[in-house]
Length: 82
Image (cartoon, rainbow, N blue to C red; front, side, top):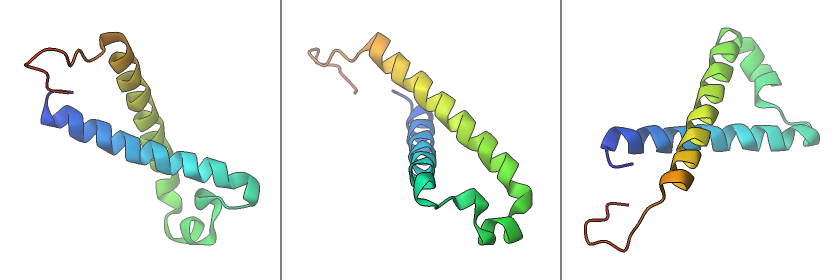
């Protein structure tokens, strides 16, 4: 993640993925953001695009995790930018 764009993309995807995970984790307790009255009445047309964005953020997050595990950061060198 050397470029600023990659950092912004990573941070954004991690926030979206974390919020989606919290939503999924609260479903057994009866809380579901996408099924709430507020979302169903005010943002019904945005539910599908939000789900696509969450899916894309999850894919980006997974890809960045795999890239980090495969490439690894070698911070022993003097020019490390991790």
